[in-house]
Image (cartoon, rainbow, N blue to C red):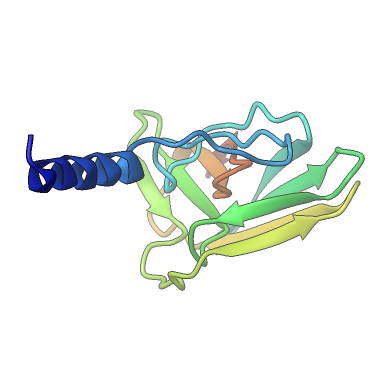
Length: 158
């Protein structure tokens, strides 16, 4: 084998090694992996507790998501962009009726937020359900890439 062939083989091997999968090293705090950062799954993380509420009033519906840190230390939430939460309304067949982010723009910068021990953070949105009546389900999502949370609440529009 010539020196030139060996150089090419070493270069290709170095590129393959650099582009291949890597083990993650950290401080021992496990981070959940999310297949699609825009659709987080409910968290199995016991350091966070979440609750969602829906208040139906004539002409509008108010949504709230509260997330409390139950860990004996602060928890850092990582967000892939400027959108921290999402509320989605589904009809009885599971079809999307409304999404809080529709028509909104978010920064494309990563962001982090520390939640102190026993601290609760809240997110709120409002929807004007003109022409809608019947049973619906609200999905309240914390879009954190390392501590995603999803809560469901059923409600009725008169």
